[in-house]
Image (cartoon, rainbow, N blue to C red; front, side, top):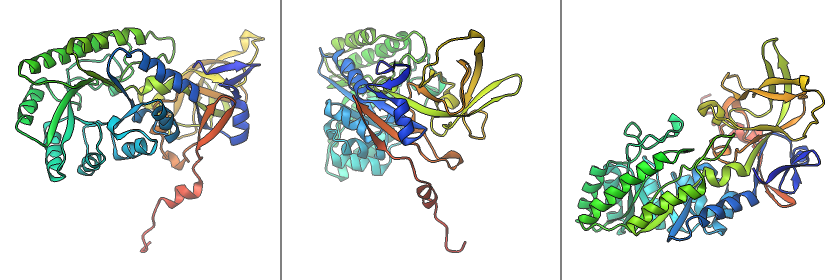
Length: 421
């Protein structure tokens, strides 16, 4: 959150007061710092400068075209998991030869479209998908470049809902299946296996799971080499955690060290798929206090954003710092109380935080929910028939609306009444 700081008592994004923006466009809204995105990407890329490296941003973290355009201009590729993400990456100017298509359920239409575009590679997650790609490539008179995503059966020690590398998860194939596919591909002209891929989960804060997973890849790669199969690259995915509160995380330096060890031993190219690490702390969700409520036991701050706008706390019990746009002077410590910050949706899970200390909050005060640049707007919905909120991009002393607030008439018009009603 280096680009979000207090100046003269007000929270600024780079060189603009968030209070000023809130007064001009209303709340709630997402706000991103261009400078933070650029710094995060360049720092990440620099850590792997000693290798032939392709950094493919995980579009699922934040798919706004302006965010993707910033990264495209920095030379980033894209890791996509749907037709929509593929088309957004292309629309933002990302080179097709830097696009990787991941995901366990690619449709025939998606595979055919990606083949026609000429993407870098498909990260294959099943034997069935491998054969589907081969058949479609043959019909299109093309050669599909694929990488086999390995499930190493490693517990990532992160939240259960975002771990992806154990045999209880739906992702990837076993090492034995990978060897069979390499053998099968040697008799096929329409598919070229160029590498191995791995991704064991998200928001990983310990180094041990990475080391364990990379050991599996190293052994498999050496087994394949003895069988005369060569790898052009290894895709180590993403998953590097960030600091949301004061938790310990794996430093970029330590992470790059263990990745470097893997690539040095295999002597091949490197692909990385960071998402959260690039954009999470580059964004905040700005929201206004609607009501203050107390029942004698609990104190509630009710804000105008809700779980449909930002669902991470509801489904992951995720912690996010919440701070006021206007910093209050501490005059009386006795005025501090523990508050639950909640939204207006008719669900008890519509809660952003519990038992947070605030001093004298007031209705119409404005708050910032921090580090919401990843998995924020992209996971939003129209639940309770609430409109999608705007997204704002800051650059120095200027800001731009990069997604409009959804109009109520658009929300209504998406439904279609049959004539017989």
